[in-house]
Length: 316
Length: 316
Image (cartoon, rainbow over all chains, first blue to last red; front, top):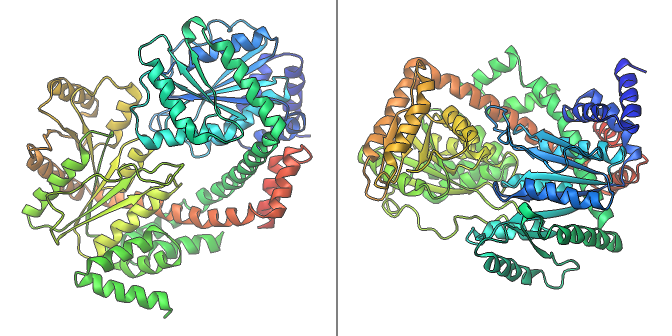
């Protein structure tokens, strides 16, 4: 057994007996990918597969983190251990996280049965799609039956999170509905539960009505997303949200959809791993002085890019 | 010569003698990728390399398309033929374009020396990064010395367009500057020219001041991005913008930066072609009943995802 494998073995034992720093370390290993991630996943994959993954997405400022904080409280009232993966959409330029110094999880920060982790996506291709399921698997295997994945819904991230969760909660605010039609269609496709947060603000009835109007199109589907009104700041409606999440879980189990979603997700994960591996190969092929010389030939119009690409593939 | 090659040869001859439908057809070929794209590119790559590529990006509603329309007018006043590639950010769900029925290019629609093409990115990985330079190359080879690439700047698209243009114009509006710091840092890295459009609105001086403040950090750089105030609807400032674009072009030529940018861009294009080719390979490997059975084994925890991914790569 290699040194890394021994260390990981030790970390897993410690994490199993409640060592949070060991757990954090394991997540770091899967987050940075590479050989250690492979060892962690190989060890923990057989122990995983029991947790519910709940994605919470919505625009910046929708009140997601306060809502997640209160939701964690409701879940803890039922004595269920909960993991939170908060995806920080980082600037693709600086690698810095936007969320930065915000104070999160005031209510639950001291609870030993709540594990909170911020993850930076760093604008990497496959960053969110690879690191998040890996981290969720670590929590799943090590005794967290409920995992909340919170992400700022900006375009593609929304779609990704929907692909990674069993249940996707979309958080909107009163006044929403003036948005573009295409975005609405997108939300309809990913949302299992709609939340209208800040329901003490004007326009809540119009927004709920707007969502219900859209949902008319979903009539006849096996699951019609409920619309839950919440005021995260005072906890109103959070119990209903937690109930809706459990109802959706029951629905997934009853219909066999849970397995279908996991099959799709796992297929995506395997594809991502294959792409990651081949991508490493591309970086290896497409670098160095010989590659630079080939690039110059294309710039100077003595060869065409397809020709060079084919040669690089054949040379692989 | 294959039938396709003969047809493409014919299309190129017709496009050279001004047949716009033949030109459009050639762009369709490179847009959809595949063997025909390869033939078109092989034929046209040697003829290309002369055009200036100018990216115009900014948030939805910043007035980019009106500005581009007026800019086309200014370029045409100098009797330069101009191509416009308008990137439609499509819903990843529906494949439909957001821009839809907007009426574009009122002023220049009848000009034989202006070629306008909307391109849908369809949320594809590599959609924008592969199709746009290909389309630009077709226009470049067939006699359009100036190509404007207009895109809605939403996150990653901004970065991509900056990577694909010789000159990147970032369009902002008065009132901008309340945005998040990370986004500002990002704009600083991609913008060669800042435009504050709708300069007849309140807050223009604050916004220009805000940008100039940021640009203090760029002091000492060989090129400090100018800040141009425009009112696209009446054409104010568009002449200054056109002058700034030419100044930047002169700067790129004088410093050798143009060749550097093209080297970087070409390297990226070759990498994208290699990835595209290998991606086809991944799709082939990761599909079918045998793959589904492997996915089920992972879902059922009898194998782990890395194991299956490695087996798929080795089997390739």
